[in-house]
Length: 355
Image (cartoon, rainbow, N blue to C red):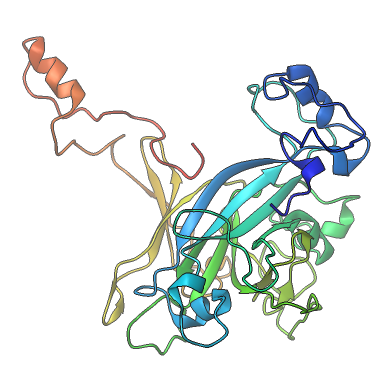
């Protein structure tokens, strides 16, 4: 809802815009190609991609995260005023609705979208002012302004921000400073393709002013940063919407350059703490490849440390593990007179964060 009506994928035809909306806008290739290169940026439709949700389960997530997202006026968590999920998704004026091969225009732009959802996956409204609790953030622009880039090149050396696709994931991890005996996750991690950073997400109270950027002195960050120190904290400006405020608690840490849609598998947590580090599935097709990553410590990948070596990538010894259940392949093989088969159902991408 925070996206202006004139920038929605199919704008409201009852409004007076500077462009004409055909009745078959969804299927009209001419309209699609024309709309994404309009002179006025505010006239270019935005598309939503690759949404994911983080369940706000108080059995596994600590109150330090939940209290920032509670709409209750007291410290007590009220089910009626507590979001059930946080959604993260990519927003872009470049869509593949008509298939690939249409070229990438100079006006190509990507944003990060965040929203608080109720148990029915509806975007929530603030009970006091009725404002929808979703925001659109120009993450590329802001990282350019603080001179950070995943490729290690300071942003101001470019004439404009490079448009990295913000296919971001938001998940909760347990920081090493956590003192809660229940071993609940107490730190939000924003993971966007190559890099990740600890963040804080808050509901902005009615009448609050957007906070200024704040920073603490820190040593120079490791590979993949600009001039700022790794301990810097800064608030992201909202391009659209004002109900939420996202802040980076530290500078981004590059995990793996030129990666996209890596799938995070968290560690098992017991009363004694995490049993191991988590894993990132960095290549979902056979043979699968995973990278051990501990999001409870920072930096997540320290290239100055010899223990990381070549990122400790683990590769499976064969395309897929043997099937532990009856598969379509094994049934068809038996019908043809053959014996049982351990062939997998499929040997390709089967559950990455994108497709």
